[in-house]
Length: 357
Image 1 (cartoon, rainbow, N blue to C red):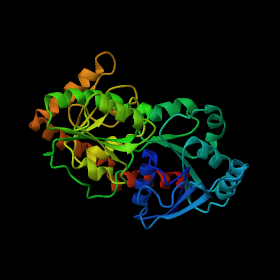
Image 2: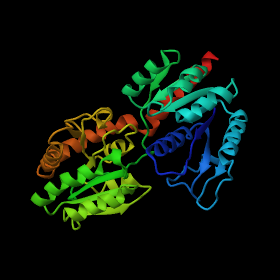
Image 3: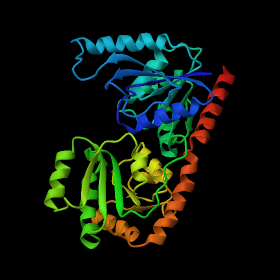
């Protein structure tokens, strides 16, 4: 079976990119896999791509290679031509915009699947064109319910979790006095409330450190906050890394302070390293991916959330036995995201859809 993935860009530092590359690599164990990246935004992809996967791009959007004034039109034309020319058994599209184009222009003999992580900003085209697809796949049960309601059950919606990279995964020894957090430094990720909570931890347990991995528009504000709280000897800005699991494996706690964790790759990667997660129990938060009390601690958002989050961190900082218990639970939870298990579910879905044609 030949499987083609169509993504906005396979070159970026995003959770959905990581999830797609992990899935493509898992499927490449037995299938012929290709990734079409609409845009090329870097000389090389941020995350490594399995050598068995064919990668090609449609538009060169690297810095310094400015598109012409009619660049968006040229991009759209290149995309339509590429979709019409796809020769595969299955076409998997990431993001609603690409899935709508797949529904409109992909050859009808191809199984067309939309891989979705969040609701579309503009639902009109989705309602109109998605019924032409063969299936929608989400990573969570909440996502499946949202998409089923949106499509009025006109199209089958399935839940398959995101895959971790093929094992063996790096494992934390749980003996470093380090709390890690990773992701894009943007407002919805709420790294500022983690820094404020860690100020309480650092005051009581000054031998612990917080490492922040990532980049983004909030970096200047976060650095100013660290300076204001006199945490320059306790909080470290580590920059970006394509191997976040390897860094998580050096920590004893992974903090996930985001207000929404639709993708959840940070959470899943922490579990895969056997590191307990501390997050907020808000709507569409880490609760989609963890089992509180077994692999994680979740704190209610709202009044006093900073103090409650700090208390949750301190409860693990001060209790090595509890950390180890949650670490064991994290490894159990991660098993559902093992590459072979996730690939098997996708293959079952794809062969099932083909049998109906």
